[in-house]
Image 1 (cartoon, helix red, strand yellow):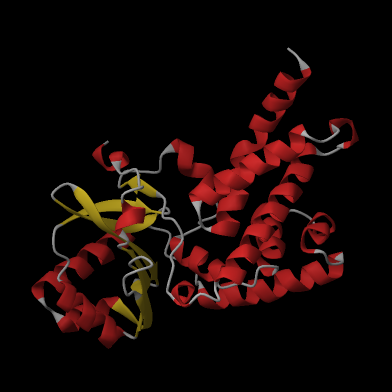
Image 2: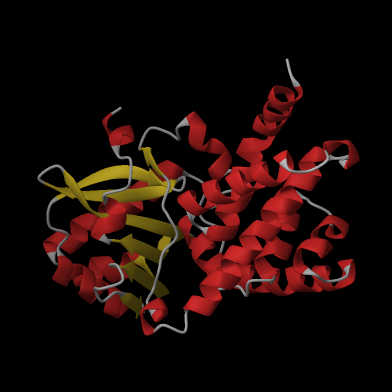
Length: 293
């Protein structure tokens, strides 16, 4: 085995971990893959004899690449189109369980609701919070990524932690109970049963919809408004049960094509938030073959 092949094998041993870190920071599967690939290029160009902790070095590199991507996004948001709601990429699994290849991306209960909150963090907060709180990376290693002292990096992570914990409550762990709530919600919406819908919703429920750059999406808040919107929508087409980022969700299809993905965050038996992706361009990129297994 030559040196390049040996280095490639060492890198591959860390790819799954690096991809999981990047997905949590970016909320995009394709961008996460790009960040991991960039880490490989940087490793290939580096003198590996000076790297004592390869896992830590690679995590730091991925963190820096992701931070650059986040800053680039922030700069682009001067464009009015960037003010729309944009949901993270959902990870779709069959209702019977998560595909083994997706387990690393979904470890630590990284539901879509949590990723939505992470999207709201400042670019420097995510590289401080995600590696430390979700992957136990010490602040001494995080500090160079965000260009701060370890103490300042700790403060960034603490600020992000308070925002995350306040905005993304822990979901109910029982998937079967989640599924019962989701099924009852869909049935009530189809029957036009306003009172039943309100009973299933947290009073402060939030619905976020992402319909793409050229179509209106946005936010709906409050049980009454969400119930009214659900009745108006009636969810045309076929609703197929699925796991969306490890939680009970629904993929809507019409004539065999996906028309929506709905992710539910259920806390204390009620729906706390719903994320709806119905951007045709992004839906067409999803691999829904897992629903046929």
